[in-house]
Length: 581
Image: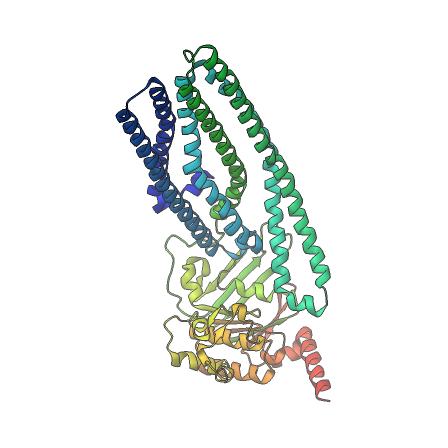
């Protein structure tokens, strides 16, 4: 885990290495100051002259200033290193997620990915800052102070050796009991965020069914569950502070009582006032160092679990890989399915697609129709290699899709989904996802083909109209038409419309299909639809049922020979007749 996380330090290595150096200098200055003060006190007691007093006083001021400067530099470099490390870590995670196949993404909840990139990275960032600064400062301070305490206090310093094991055992028990609770609570964090995400996405449904109270109760239960686990963990960690206080006051009581006794009974021969004052200072330094170490341990307990979750993202291997010598040029839009069987994961019991054999010529218009769950979308996802076939092969342009460079293949396959996604930005910025070099005229032409220009021209800002996140300020039909225009700008060899005109009226649907024939005649067009009217003009119509191809033919042929297609057509036309009546 540490090795994997360390890869994200990169350009912040120098800041990470410089920080411990300045921390060490700061510690040296801080530990030398009590020694100088003790000597100064003894000198004053012995009746030194004013020159010696001024010299030692100025030296103390200089040491204090140097300690401040070294501490400030260490604080600056540690902040730069930890924040930079967190930035790189988020970047590496985001890049790793971008390389995932759909199968990889299925392993993680969206809410879990968000939690890992926010809360978990923050925990690791805090731990890293502690590691390069406090975790260096505390042990060094402990060693220096312990050494100086022995030099100044002699046998009295042995009290610290009795306190350290007590603290060590106490901290070990705290960590042992707290670690499992933090492991549980992070998983519950994911579920809590999933509940929030689901509720916000489904806000219209929640309000339309007046289920606010139910959702609030559900959220309260999840939040209370997280709170209960955190409370149990914090209760365990709370033992840390009183344990530290007990050790501090025990040592201070011993040093003050026994030290005062030695100073008085030996008239300063065994221990003088200067030595006792420095011993008290070193006592506080050592115990504060132990306190800082305990704080580091607490942060590390949380960071270890967060680090494991982050590394899961970074080390997840994509199930899709480019071949050693990938093909970058897609010759044409022909598609061939040969004995294809497909399931979404190795653990899946049933095949999503079985025994698929299909031949589609370049430039053809293909309609796909079938009931819900007939695996229409599963079929087209294999073309752009969003998933790989379990058995058999899918060929585009006569070449197995697994031989192509993935990016090159997907650049030639444009998919418009039913659940269209628009990103926050202007209409122009969204359209240029299809072609970042597209001119204004090209965008207007594509939008006219997709019947989107007619509503864009009504906006005050026209193509500079700002689209809110998720396209919340445009209707479902408008989103679909904008997404079709975006795909047309790509001018792909294969265009797939996955029920992407479901939110537009039949007249607009017909206009879009007619425009596609004239705008990109050489492009292979695959139209998945629920309405027979959307596919009846296709060169071939594929009827899907239960993950298999039930029939292939033209509209007229299927009406005569296929019961499923005839039933769909009849029911929809009856519904249309009834609506007209």
